[in-house]
Image 1 (spheres, helix red, strand yellow):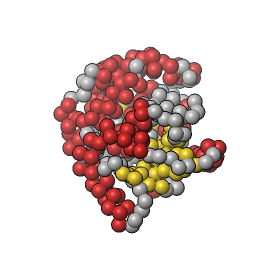
Image 2: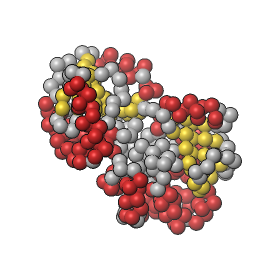
Image 3: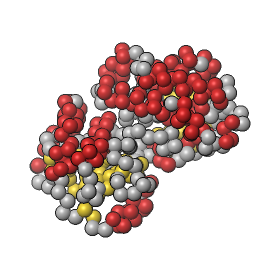
Length: 335
C-alpha cells in the first residue's frame, strides 16, 4: 500500500463520514458511555473530520513533506489518546497511518467506541489497513515510538515510562481570546462556538478572555443566549449551579446570563461553565504575557492579528494545526 493508496482510502473515509455512514446506534452507545458526548457534539466532530479528509486538504498537507513520497520505514507507534472530546485522537491516528507506520491505540475509557468504528470503516475501504491498526486495553508493548496525550500529572508518568523511546508527550493546554471592543454581534456568536463547543472540554475551547479596561460585557453576554441549550445537559447544569453557588457564598464578583459565569482571574484554565477574564490597557503587555506562557496555550483567538485564529474557528483546525505546536508528521518521518 503506497502513499497514493493511503490518501485515497482516507479521502473516501471522509466522504463516507460526511454522509453519516457511522451507525447511529454506535453514536448512541458512545453517548451512554459518556454523557458529555451528545449526538450534537459527536456529529460536529465527525463533520469536522470529514472536512479535514477532503482530498484537496490531504494533498495540501502532505505536500509540505517531500520525504513522505519516498519514506518506506514501518515502525510500531503507540498512541495513548485523551477522552475529553469525541475522537480527540483522530489526527494522531491519521498521521501515523498516512506516514506508513503501524499504530497501537490505547483509548481513554471516556472515548473508547467511536474511533474503533471509524477504523472498521477504513478497513472496509482498504483491507490492508487491518494489519496496521491495533487497539489494546493492556499494558503497551512491542512499540518503537510513543505519542501520549494527558494531563500535567499523567505527563510526568509518561515522561518516566517512555523516556527511552522517541516520543511526543502532551500536557494540559487551553485557549484564550483577545477582545478590543470593536467586535460585532456575529463575532461574539462565533466566539460562543469557541467557548461552548463540546461544553468547553477541549484544549481548543476558549476558557479566558482579555478585554480593555472598563469593558462592558452586556453585548457579549446577550450574544451568548443562542447557546443557552448547554444548560439542558445535566452535567453542564451541575457545574454551573455549583460554581454560581460558590461565587455567591464567597462573595466573588462575577457576571452571569444564567448559564455562563464571568469572573476576573489571572489563571488561563477555568472550570466548566466559567470564563475567566482580565483587563488590559496596553495590548503589547498581553502579547508579552502570551509569549512567556506559550507552552500553556493551544489557540489564541482575535480579530487583531492575522497570526491569531479567527472567531469561530478553534474547533475547525487545519491538518497543519498540530496540538502543542509539535509537528507530528515530521516526528513520524524521522523515526
